[in-house]
Image (cartoon, rainbow, N blue to C red; front, side, top):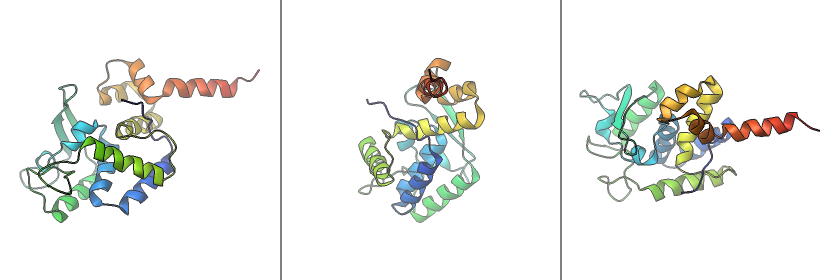
Length: 189
């Protein structure tokens, strides 16, 4: 697996939003849910309608699932705007409880695969002029990076990502390299 970057520039994130809005509704929801949940691609693609709706058919405030990689239970807050988006998407696509949210164009009983998700993001990054190496894992990294800029709470982000050490989280976010770059910008001999 190749190393991918977080999207650090908020303007690039805005460009991706604008691009995906003109593409498919499914792909736009994929971007938004991916950016807002820190889920790995295998967990993101396996979300079913039943994971998102309560017994009354209303989108839950929290997505709860068991991570495939770690086996740990996750409980992720879904903001009101995203809940509205999910609700509209489910209704407009006439999705049933057992359907995958990111269903295949050929069969609603199957979800898109990792390669298809990767191609969707790579094409969007190219169209938006993003030069960094972007992949499906960039969505997870982007949330974490932006959360770090907002809060500077590396321990909280480490917990959100289910990492075992602060050093792993710093390296994951590229913070070590960013700090070294800043050092070299400040110290000129």
